[in-house]
Length: 496
Ligand SMILES: Nc1ncnc2c1ncn2[C@@H]1O[C@H](COP(=O)(O)OP(=O)(O)OP(=O)(O)O)[C@@H](O)[C@H]1O
Ligand SMILES: [Mg+2]
Image (cartoon, rainbow, N blue to C red):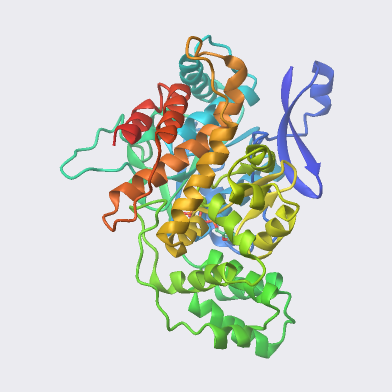
């Protein structure tokens, strides 16, 4: 029997599902809560502040038995403001408090990712997994099984739909509530459970959230004391009254924006400078014009935030002796931000003709480059599952900084990597279940590459990415796998 258990690995909370016998199950009764085993996030050891929002969240979405109702809450705010961090902190804290028996974190940025998340939940909740004969049925059936389970179970549950994006509209198009919000088809109906959504804009929420009036928390900058705390914790600069005054100045420069604070503090630590030197070196004069993120064109970056981030990313690019680390970052900026397996990076470069790929991924320098990027807050790493995460905001800034030539080169390298790894089934026998786990894992990278390629085709600055017929072939193979639930969006990418 499959049950849910919590483990404590390498000093970090990490949750997974395991198989137990009935007697073992009772001894694990205290192990309430489950995060799917492939959750790539670990609890942020320097999570700071947000007590006010967390306390309101407890009141709004804690499970209640009577009267039974589904509670919903959305965290809305600009990129990097800490929405995902708050949602995860609530999840970890809830598991500690024994609030829920089931906690699921769905990556909701694209429909393809939602599909993957629900296939994973189906497997980890032990509902049926890859039981159906065809992939298509299996995906639809997984989604429906998970939804049905959540709609009927007596166990208290929490589902987080993280990083939801609004539907893309063409001029004059009217929205279809059932089809245009991909969230609609994944939302468990009924009067049970707690649903938490994070999104950059409330237009992403759509009908399932709005119809029965979910609560909205607008997430803005951290308070001054929390911001200063973060700066001290990461930079390890000595706490003194004078340093506090400079730290407060940096807080004002970035308006308490948490991702800017952590990035600035990491930069200070790596460069071995103090707060005063940072302010002198990077006065907020060089404003970067307001920009639309590449990852979410409906959103925007504010000038003041862009500047500090811009400085940090430029700093990484021009770090002497770390050219390969920058190349690795460029490559990662074309892959799924929610996780790249280091095993895939190594295996995809094996025997590759792509010299850059071989050089940055397969060389002994890989660990050095990875550490450098982690220290600079450009990437994060979950050591338990040897996976690299790169925030979407960091990806955007890399794309802004790259020249058209380097963007093309990084796109080609990322494509080569994934293409080398993609297991192709024979044409006469497309349905090969043994290939599905690999294809499922890699499909999020293919979808990411396709999105970035399509976005580049839409901008009219002549900086579009050139893709070969082999890229179309990879999309075709992937569309076959992600069919039919995400096929419409995949095919529209190909036809575009
Ligand atoms: N409360 C916090 N304490 C410490 N660090 C934080 C906090 N909130 C955010 N951060 C830092 O800021 C980064 C960005 O936060 P997060 O991913 O939650 O932003 P987001 O609002 O979800 O952005 P996006 O809209 O791009 O998904 C985190 O990776 C973390 O380094
Ligand atoms: Mg987020």
